Amino acid sequence: MAYPTTPTFATMGVESVDPTLFTETVSGRVQSRKIASQKWKFTASYPPLTRDEFSPVWGYLMAQRGRHKVFTVVIPELSTTSGTATGTVTTSATAVGSSLVPVTGLTGTLKIGDFVKFAGHDKVYAIIADLTGDGDLSITPELVRPLGTETVTYNSVPFTVRMANDIQTFKVGKGMMFTNEVDFVEAL
Image 1: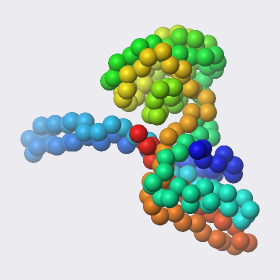
Image 2: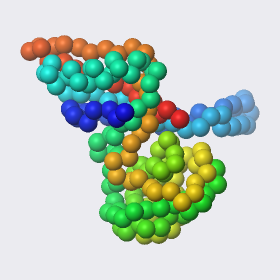
Image 3: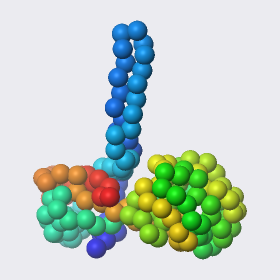
Image 4: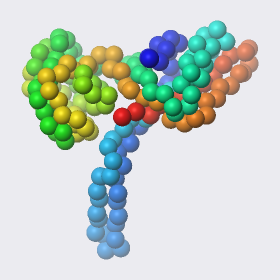
């Protein structure tokens, strides 16, 4: 079930959470180790809305029952490539842990900072180097699952998320205008 696309968000905050165990001794020696996989977090806020505009959003949030349900959300502006990419882009077999994914069928450019999703994955990846035409797509984090021949989504990328907490609130202000902020966390 997809999150409502209207009304649209006024602002969006994005976090990349990439947990690391990190210690530094008095002498300056540093040790670090990855302890979990990366995930995306989002904070979205709406402009002041009328009750009629806000009610579908509120109803959807209540139906998710806090952090219980998983759903998809397409984030305006961020979910579409900033490059000139067109065509059906597909991957080749790639192992878990790889940050380079061979792709074919790309016409135009996928740009650094854009998001992509592979057909067989719930995980969304960020592009860390421009790619024009066929070649190796550089992504972060590393693949959490192996790839076969899969389609790459680079426009209207759906993030699989859940609510970040069990408490949802809204405010009613002057002129009976409703304001709301929603926190999402990637569900893997």
